[in-house]
Image 1 (cartoon, rainbow, N blue to C red):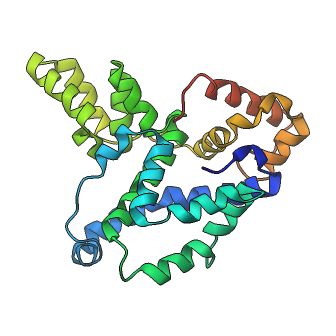
Image 2: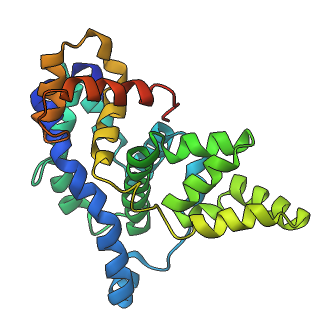
Image 3: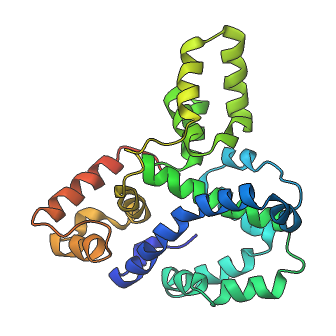
Length: 256
């Protein structure tokens, strides 16, 4: 995948600008499916479940979907570039290589796999924004016995209940008549709380994006340049100090 260690403030800003748009896809796709179901069916065919993909790590999920779509060669070329991060940003800009690839292949591309990619990418980014962790990371915690991770994941994507790991836990709860479990599950099915959906989510995702870049090496001015100038944190005298607090909090979690 993309080497985030080489991201410059300018490249980081380019990615930051995309976050609100990616976050909005969930509502746009849901509105389209609700208001024009025939059009969705005409384009994507009968809906099939993508939830088993969440059994993989986030990186493995994307690799799997890129292979299904035939995009893996482009990703390999990006990573061969002298600046993979810049090459990736250039590839996904409007009208750039990714759009050109779609126009050239839209007649033969498997639209179901394209839908999977859009949903899986958006849901994982939302999960990172809310909880510092991808859905793949939450599934891994559920495998280790964490019901808290279970409920977090369900609040992000309710279809994850059909994921094998989640179906197994659900069956056990039914067998044991685990009433507290189902009370928590009912709350999770309502989706993320308004508190969790606060705008700070974009900052959380950006921190995860650069967590391997070695934040301790950054000066306060560099942190402000990355996060404040990119519009991810309000300009304030204590901005750098507060950003560092968010970074320290993010280090407690495994992200992928």
